[in-house]
Length: 146
Picture 1 (tube, rainbow, N blue to C red):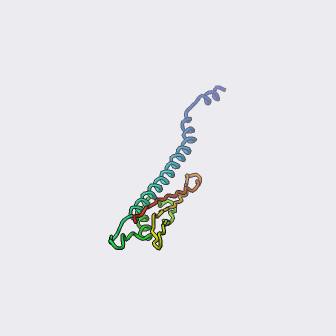
Picture 2 (cartoon, rainbow, N blue to C red):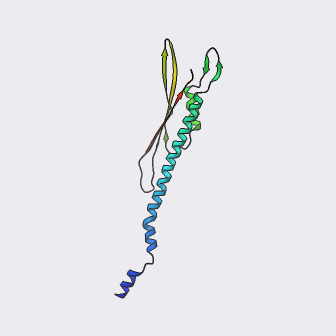
Picture 3 (tube, one colour):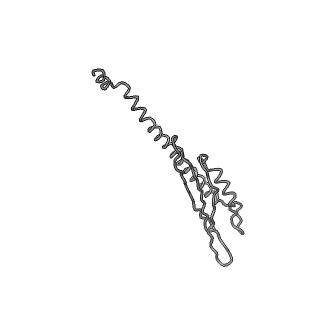
């Protein structure tokens, strides 16, 4: 009986058992924070790319007093956004969508602004199980000089 009592009071190895229980949970939390950080990086990269595309869309090439400005085409804006977007390699980035909002005055149609939209989807992996997909959508509105 004294042998059993001495085993009950012996605390050697208790730290190892506590670590074996706590370590997987700690690793899971740290890995989850890393996954969320990757999503924040993708969001920042999308915002940066859209900002660069919006700035590029407002540029005036070859200003001519008679015809006005020659603005970049939608294809050139898409290329610019694609070059400047970062942090989206872990998921699926959609092609840039550009929607023109116009105003008609008599026979003349003028583009008032463009709306640039990017969508991104990232699967999450929490080491021990698959998590939900993270979906992000960012857009910028670009007002054009007329």
